[in-house]
Length: 195
Length: 385
Image 1 (cartoon, rainbow over the protein chains, first blue to last red):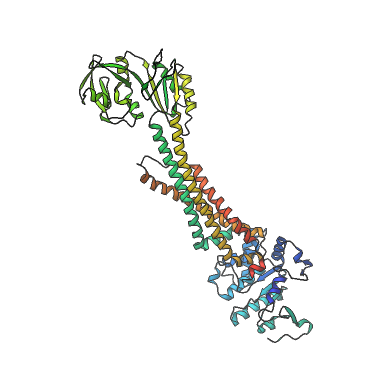
Image 2: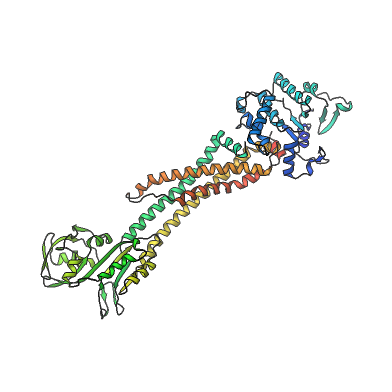
């Protein structure tokens, strides 16, 4: 958590293999991400990381099902497998009846669910979520957080960025950032910064 | 779903941008196809006309010495041993490999006949072939249709005050004057023209031919080769290709084609520029999208394929549509440029070339934008998120 500009998204991008740290290294499953070639980094992201971006960022020209299939397109799965995995994941997030809708035909909450389904369809060990509820109303935000909590209960590791203090109730561990530095870590008993 | 599916969905669901690129390229292809089709049709028409307009091979009896004359001015004696060509030998012309390239074979016999106590040059011809060959001849009256009919050149008609329908006595035999040649400004004005057998009989040259003019209809005119073939079947004759005519024709057509190709290449370059600018714009506009693709695990090569496939599909469609519209335009424009005798004809090389060139130009012009897209760093692309 942290205020705007505190470095939350940068931290997430660094963890996700999108932006190399200026010093230090990122180890996931014992793999030093930034020692991999650019192409292998792409493969790593596909296999290990699921991203949920701010404001959904779905492809406007693809249906919900096609959007969810995107990470599977560059795998060796058959078309049938891709379709069925995407449909199954959309069913999981409560959108089994909206498979063939374009993003413009979905509500904000539904688009966020599609984004979550896309991030998790290839079952990555880590889900990185950058303010997934930032553009949603309170009720819809709560639904999305419940959905993420459900995945977490099933064993999904989730690293989520938020500047909304109301979301603290959902988190197991809270790192608070300020000016690019961790100023509090709830796991070691520090106070969470009051912002 | 495959990468190509993503491309197709993008193209079909973003019709505005797709249509802009498609129409831009299509106009380029249409222009090139129309220009080349028109040039092809008009060239063939021009070539056909040129080839029909006068002989490009002349067959004369073998001579024993060089002629000392130019433009009708005699500077020396005629050859000592002049003999005619045996008419029977002309059947051999049909045996040459390029016989089908001979549009017109116009044999003729020449000699002097008596008209009003004077000597006049009589030329015996096969009227249909001769008038086809000499399209610049215009006639009052008509061509001779039976053995007792003749046509007079303008100088002869003037000198002897000849009128259409008049009876004319030539070397003691009566003929009807059925045609008067309008003035040509050439030796033809001084001729009387009769059917070949009649003239041969009047001149006592039965079975003899004084010369043969041939019009060879051929795309690139292997006239020298055809002359060699004719020499082999006409051993007693000199066969002379009229090089100057052929070279002039080919030069004129070559210049025309050069101009058309110059315009076509300019249009192709403009088309390439249009694709380049459009694709560069599309890449900038889709930086965010590319960032997402990269973030969810697409390799650089996948991005490259996405962009190039998009350009390839649009270019192929533009090529096909451009070719069809170009053909339609050629159909529409040809009658305006010509009297209707030039025709469009199916040219598989142009069809495949137009579509192939559209794809190649589209892909080449997209290479740089595609590489640029594939090298976008995901973090930089995602900054706009």
